[in-house]
Length: 330
Ligand SMILES: *[C@@H]1O[C@H](CO)[C@@H](O)[C@H](O)[C@H]1NC(C)=O
Image (cartoon, rainbow, N blue to C red; front, side, top):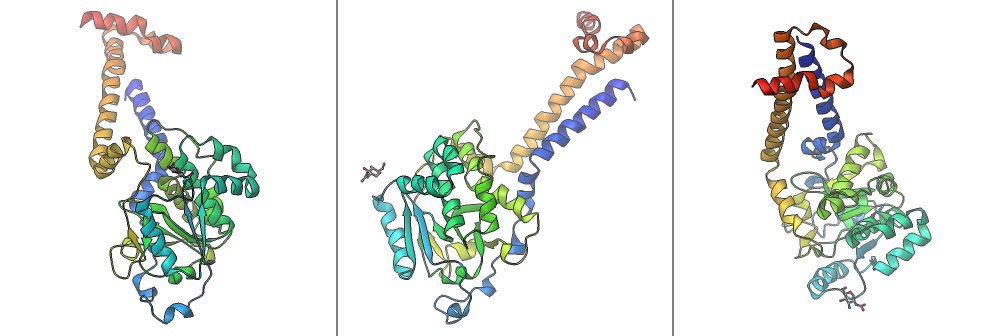
């Protein structure tokens, strides 16, 4: 094979390998559904079953929620109250912006600088939930999620999160014992993932939000944690929309912006976008091949420039003596 073709193929392989390596965790999210850690229907007692009280209660009875201040918008009073009503024996903690900052400053001062510097308030609301679960344990619930039945059966799992569609896990309802290694990893990795992306939505998702937690979850699960270190997964049927589900969903998403529509569209059409992405990528490579590598080979052949390979590398890259000639000839 021609030297140029070999180089071209090598570069292509390296670039592709690098790209795949970088998004490998994301790609595994498309095929790994967490079913090996699923909290199955069969192991969950029916609502009000006596079996519930016979299960271990590992997670402390604390409900955590977050909001800017103590004055909740009217649309969230009802879901909040539904959780309070079903859990009279639980401690309730509403993490306002002020309380959240004080808590981080007192208990996790190493994180305060990152916490304060987040450009979007929702990033602080995302981060604080991992810290309070790590510190106190308990169950975190988004304010737009109401409760449909007592969460007592879920206290039996040292850590659980919720599966989302089409991929990954969500951070809108989660439970854990204090100091669970998964939430330790979730708080420890926050500074490293604190990067800015072009769209605010991606920045939030990937630095603190569900995408961030999904990636941490993939890394964590790939070490095959056993026993109490496992993270169990609540699947959609147990999560909402059925009489036996734990939660109800109310209108929420107080922070969504314009770029969200684009992202949701992209999420819905990800197969199409992947195909287009590969097509564009390969067309680009083909064009590079056609314009840079082939003309040189032809020049080499037609003008028998056998000494070409002895031309210094930088001269070859600039390609003045060959490429420009060629273009004039065409
Ligand atoms: C709480 O925050 C909301 C939303 O920013 C604001 O409208 C309201 O005035 C605040 N309430 C208090 C008591 O500060």
